[in-house]
Image 1 (cartoon, rainbow, N blue to C red):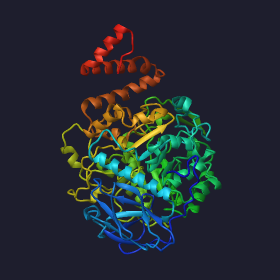
Image 2: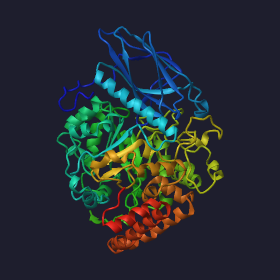
Image 3: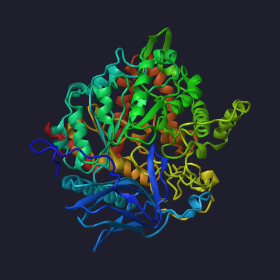
Image 4: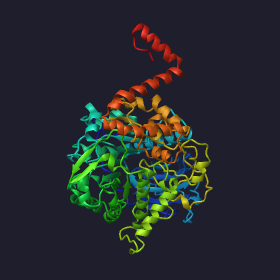
Length: 640
């Protein structure tokens, strides 16, 4: 079904969104959010399409706020009506059009409840974006396959399944293993990462890689590049982008931006790509402490790219990333102003990961960078989140705070967060009113925040309800959604997400990386790269899903100490006492382990952990004991 894979003809280059598709009755004006543009649709709406001499396909992205597949979209493009259950978040739809079709009617069975957007009196149902007409039958089939998998995945989440027939809608990929920044960024564990990658470090990423992945690639809607390397160094990047475009994939990449040449910019224009460019500084002086002296040329590259794509809302989407640390926290305000000046689609706040093993220590541009001394306390992170949120709202810069993953910082740590917001108000009280000559404020109705993978990020609308739950247990998702739930009533109509686990990564994502296969970007590898097929429904993945369904964190999650859900659960004391003790013990143990070069882990911690695991299994699995006895008597390895 993929015309651009080996042995098949190349798919035609798709045009930009077709201007001949006209929005008729039932559509509101174009708005901007989620680092892009969209239109709200009423429960009934019409699209006008000029006739053609051949059959075609109508393609668009659709976003539903409902999480239980009870909202449906019925499409009529002639004599036949076809209904689609709508999965939560953005999903791709493609429908066949007869040559003579000139009117397409869209009908949604129920609206987005008005209680979720009280400032907005409009009747809202779903959002549409990227509406186009094309004649590529293979692309049409690919989009239908992706959407069917997305719906199946949503149904399995709603049913609480731990063994999945669907494949991950979000697929982590590892494009390239080399980098142009040498020596590496001061916070990059380059040597350790390459040691973990081992023999896979130089494995090429090609069309054959995608062919080998089969359904894992075919069914995915979003590709997330998590490589420890610079993707624009790839010689075959152009052909891979052609494959992703032909299949309708959304690609997320994290380049350093230093080789965004004119040629690289041209190859990106019009593609559904999210570029996460790590700046981490608002001045050349601070940037040089982290990387090198390329700050000014990097800014020129970004300005050329953003101008070429037509500013905010154009493709590719440009996200500028700031990781607050001791050395750059004083530039947070200036960084928000820089994002506004650049017309970046979004500012991403990404905390520096806590690490048990990192011993990075650099002298760069006259600055001594000690990784462990650069880490901010949790209280400092809350204040940074609050400050960034207030300043971004003031300057109309869209913000994605990765500490909001699994629940908003504002709702979870309300008192401290609001204190940080008040600090900003005090600091700018005497300044002139904020203006943004290049952007209009976000619409009042745009209250639902989307995560990186396109799913609705659900936040608790009533934090007091969490305290009423039997402790200790981590909070599950509530039916309500929104970036500003403090303005919403406490009793809200259900959107079907009440019983979802706090983290959906083990259901929606899998990362096939050179350093191993992971269910989330914060955890450790479950298997080597080539064993990805065995991981998706492995016993370990099932155990992780089961624990999350029960409102608990699996031991795998507890080891992902940088995960925002784990960190916030620990700070709010929502973890069971023994899990809090484990995390506290790890924080006390890790400095000792680092001080002695990792030997305590090697000769004390890991042997004790293996012994405890064997004792626990022997106490709960009599067959395990008998197999061990037979193995000792016969000298043969135990049989599974």
